[in-house]
Length: 443
Image 1 (spheres, rainbow, N blue to C red):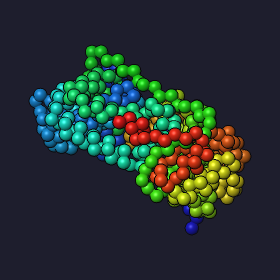
Image 2: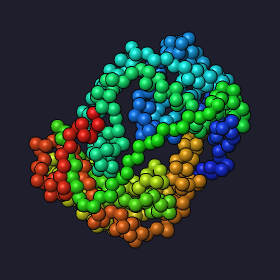
Image 3: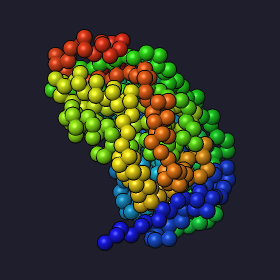
């Protein structure tokens, strides 16, 4: 039987998102017409790049009480009304989320407001929290995936980078409960955007918020953020970190040009054709044909914000004794793009099918909009990719490969056992540097 064609559905940010204002707060809303549940988000344009304590304070909040209630009392109160909250801080933004039954919206938001503004220092809770943090930090340093993430960040930004923007062991040890509580109290007075998914309209929820989430008399100024500039690679370099295993993992990375939305359709099809899946050129050549790797891929990656640069990357996970052949195999593909009309047609079909079947719904619409806005767009770029794909040819992909991937300087990030890989073999790839875990992790 022929497969029924599935028509794509794009997001129309102007129609699908309602807008209102609650005092000085901008409110973006998508109505939930299926049930009586809500999800509320408060999004701040500040994170650990502005204050290293913010992610730690965010995790500390759940252990705190107020003058009138213990943390256990607060947990019980939220449980009784079938609601919950979470605070998460990334590098450049922090998000507070509250969810539950719409009937309990006012109560849940009021309870959280009281906790955030009136939480009290608890040194005993902090001591227990520090123990958890220390264990997590130690586990991170013993994880090969985390070690590779540290190498990649070092390759993209240099010795001071987003990955190792962490408290030192001494700073963590000397951390006081009052410092973290001050960070939380300040957060309550920063300007932010409100996003809502629930049964109410944007205007209705904006009215609710004036009662339960009133703005302070004046907002505190957001602290300045640390800037991490992406490096311009001028020559091949090798960053090596030791890890006791029989495999060797190699990650190629290069900072490319600034993001250009017009290139997105080409980028999407190139990734599908070249290195994106089991039918891609990279997978079929390196793993299936040559059996040089247990895992391999390549991608041209776009940033999360328009002011940052794209990056070209590739990966091979192989046995240490196949290191040289695996690296040579990937370098051949990075230098010359093989042509396969069958693979190209499969890539086109696969890309269009995945776009046609993907559905962005509920609060996903709000986060899709935020992501597009950060990239300087006010439209769903998937539509452009879907419509442009049938007209693209191998010549378009080759032109892109020549411009962005071929004969470019890369930084090789290598995680392997130092006793199983020869330093000379790595040095032949570029300027060699061995990094220790403190350099990578910042502690």
